[in-house]
Length: 102
Image 1 (cartoon, rainbow, N blue to C red):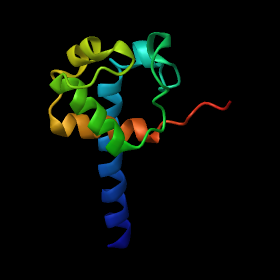
Image 2 (cartoon, one colour; image 1 turned 90 degrees about the vertical axis):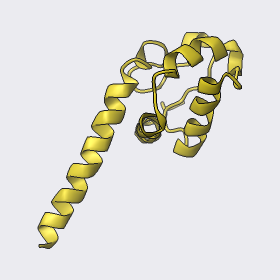
Image 3 (cartoon, helix red, strand yellow; image 1 turned 180 degrees about the horizontal axis):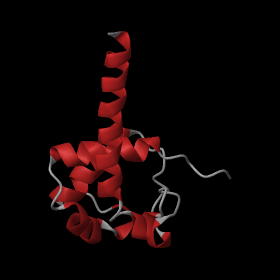
Image 4 (cartoon, rainbow, N blue to C red; image 1 turned 180 degrees about the vertical axis):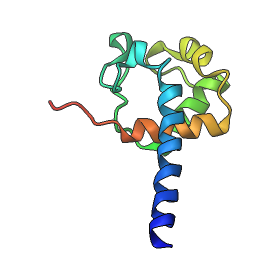
């Protein structure tokens, strides 16, 4: 029974990461495959950013109330189609990415 519960927990977390990874594909063009780049040479590196902070920022971009690094309009278009669940999945995935070594 214990093995089944562990397997189900692992499968659930894998699905969550898979969804976040799929959503991140459209972010990778600017932020890098692992969130390791400053988007368009302007943004902060997002890899490993706290999920709650990412959710707050993405919601700000979506609402048009955030214009960090002058990227508000571009980011608003990128996140416009994401609902709250997708934003959370994406933020959770970004939090798992490793920050590049300095």
